[in-house]
Length: 265
Image (cartoon, rainbow, N blue to C red; front, side, top):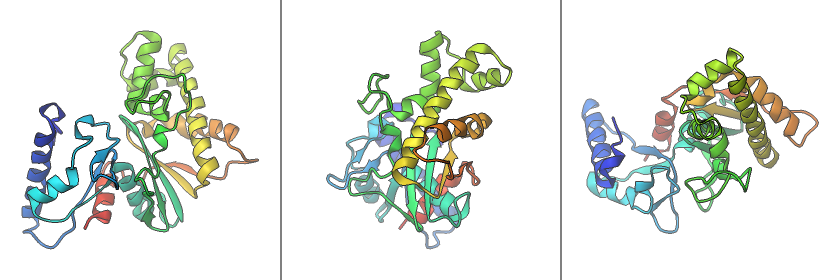
């Protein structure tokens, strides 16, 4: 279902309510949970959504408004946390105590699951590694800071960096294909990506030292991440060796939905 963000906050809520009611009817309204994954998080201080890259939702009482419309309690969790929960319970992180899930899509999110529980933190920003700056002089991120991880290793960020560098609005998939074909410009560009990927992951591992990192999102399908990208992590991590597995997701695009169901009430 399209988000229809251009039609505003109320239209987005209308679409969520409509989808929920369709799904509830499909199971004859049998007992069920309601969990929802979203970019950003509900502020524990205000109850309003914050940090979403769907900026029209920021500062809005999303949870309260949906509960009022639906007349039932719901749980809302960061979408990367939902992804990490699904992969920890049933995917690539199954059996691991500390699983960090990374979404490399339009943006770059992170979620942390420890012993089967999402770690949200007291400000609901646990895992928000995509908004750590790796270059204070870098491009402006939607969050207001400069040089965030998201600007350099997300699909959306890479598309913008390529256009800025080469004045060419080439789709990222075409850049990937050109890289494997040995096209010099694509090779140069993605070698810079590998360095930034290595720096971003090494910072994460230096802080958390998780048992596994699971990559999701559209750009996680780029095969060279698991060779050249991991070599850069190994080069930059503060250790004599890299023991942290960095792997592709197993569940696929439904991981976030499955994780939301786990955290639902």
